[in-house]
Amino acid sequence: MNRGGPFPGVVLIGFMGSGKSSVGRKLGRRFGVPFIDVDERIESAAGCRIRDLFVREGEAAFRVREKAALRDVLSVKGCVIATGGGAFADEENRILLRSYAPVVYLEAAVETLLERLAGDLRRPLLRGGDREEVVRELLSRREPGYRTADVTVRTDGRTVEDVAGRVADWIDRTEGRAG
Image (cartoon, rainbow, N blue to C red):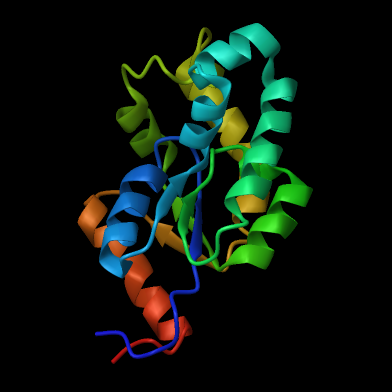
């Protein structure tokens, strides 16, 4: 199927609920490479859930942990990496991630995100307040960074398999790996 060189790696970015972790796992299996979820890595290192880190330490301290986790993760070449929703909002993180591998923005409409996040109590930034208002406000701040990705793949109305297939096809085409 693939004739090109070794898998170049790929970074998945997008808002919470866009499908980064689900699509990332599928891509890792498809290409036979490790999948790394940066949020899971942070939780493992901290010994607690991200929501608890936010409560204990606040968002600024979490972002410091996130930056350290990204540096650690990027030391392993050729992986599929799913970042947290806010990681790509930071300019230094964008530079680091772009230097690692192609960056794919998994985009979803606000309505899709709200539907996917309904009942999800793990997301600290969605606690309290009007969820739709919070999602719209955060997305408007993060989207300019997301838009600098190498490619955007819409996820609305698509299965995880379909989105992963589209990302994999794009990687194969851009890396000359299609056979």
